[in-house]
Amino acid sequence: MNKQHPYWNFQEFTTFLLLYAADADFVITTEEKDFILQRANMETFQKVWDDYKEMNDYDKIQTILTYKGTHYPTATQKNELIDLIKKEFYADGDFSLLEKNLLLTLDKLM
Image (tube, rainbow, N blue to C red):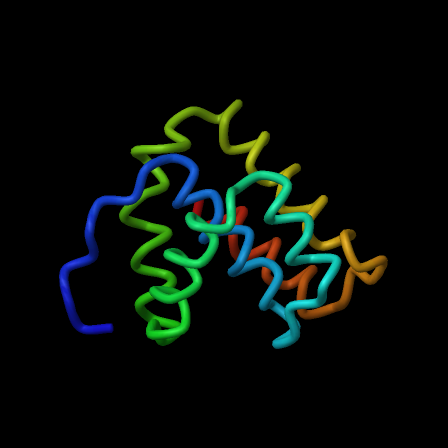
């Protein structure tokens, strides 16, 4: 991405995290997208998706590290986020090994 990222509000950052989780196994299914759209409107989803597609893995991790303290600063909020991400993983009925590994990584990053 190589540019200063504009400020994302709570919903935009949450949408980003759910996209990141959905993409853990390199396939975002219709069920996973629908799960995200239950929490974000199409305009927010599209805005975040457009940015997400331009990011490399490093940029995605840096984005998480940048925003985690702003939008999920407490242990309780972090746990709520991890629970939401777990629900995203189960949205397509398959909690793959790649998704399990990403969950462990996110738990450590957050």
